Amino acid sequence: MNCKTCKKPIVRTAEEVGLYKKFGFEDSSLCFECDQRNRICFRNERKLYMRKCDKTGENIVSIYSQDKPYKVYKSEVWYGDSWDAIEYGRDFNFEKSFFEQFAELQKIVPRIALSNVNGENSDYCNMTVYNKNCYLVFGGDYNQDVQYGTLCMKNIDCLDMDFSDNSEQSYFLGDSVDCYGCQYVFDSNNCNSCYYLSGCTGCSECILCTNLVKKSYCILNKQYSEEEYLEKKKELITGSYKQRQENWMIFLELLKKRIVKFSHQIACENCSGDYIKNSKNCKYAFDTGESEDLYNVVVGYNAKDCFNSSLIGYNSEVCYNMQSTIRAVDSIFGYFVVESSGMAYCDLAINCHDCFGCVGIRHKRNCILNKQYSKD
Image 1 (cartoon, rainbow, N blue to C red):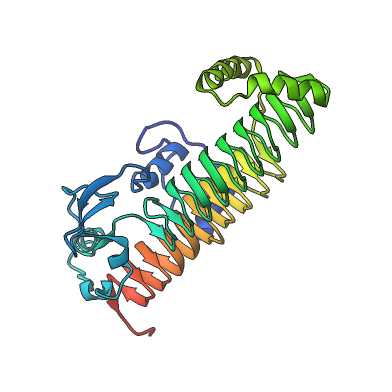
Image 2: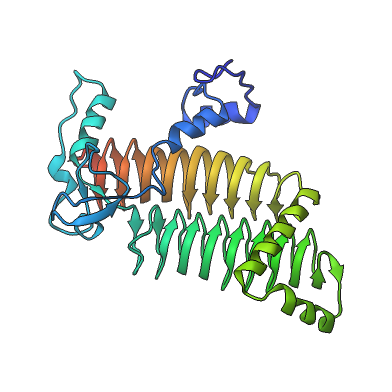
């Protein structure tokens, strides 16, 4: 079989074939890359625009530019009581295709300017939940006092970080976890007071090092006494821009010569992919943590039993072809489904249950095309 988009050959594993049967769908006939691309193209994570709120007329920041064919409300209005998505409900027309009716509904139901759920003093964040005192954090959740972060989770008092979690008082982290007081640290975990590291574990007070485990007072992978190290640290970590640039150039040369892991995995069992932490039975998984039984997933946190999905997290379970979820359960083909279950083909749904083809709904159940029905 060849991918119907890029025409490259596809070889399905027996496990993958079994998952299609389990979720009750025919094979998508898409390779891994094209399948992920099809989902992620719906997500504008970091490009922001100035536009008018279609309810108040105020200037707002939004992921939708003014020329897009959508109604857009600022967050306070969208979450407020002045409107209800059920007002836009309609009967299902069996003379027209579902997707045609769904697209029409998407254009008339107001959309939230920024997908930012339950943020506190974090107005300029997007694709996030439960951040406090954060600024320009994208796809990162449960952070406090964090600025300029992408897909970073549960950090405190940090600046400039990507794909890094559970760290504190750190600057310029990439794919690192459980770090404290670190700067320019990549692919490392459980380090503190370190600078310019790559691939290190459990280190403290190290500078310009790679692939060290449980070491202290090292510079350029050379061991020093505490006294010698602290003297050299005064020369290397001055805080000046010039010194930072010099250290950075040295660090880049170190990276060219280092030995790299075939896959970045921490405390994993039976997993394949890259950048996986504390997970079990995750195959073709990338940038995932605290998860189990994922297959073909890019970015997943605290997720379980999900297949062909992207950016899913925090207790999302039994999901197929989902994107940008938090606590989504038993759901298929959805975008930004939060704390909801039994959802199918829904776009932006928060705290809902058993809905089909709905857009922009909150605290609803048993709806089709935004029209309310009885359970029966």
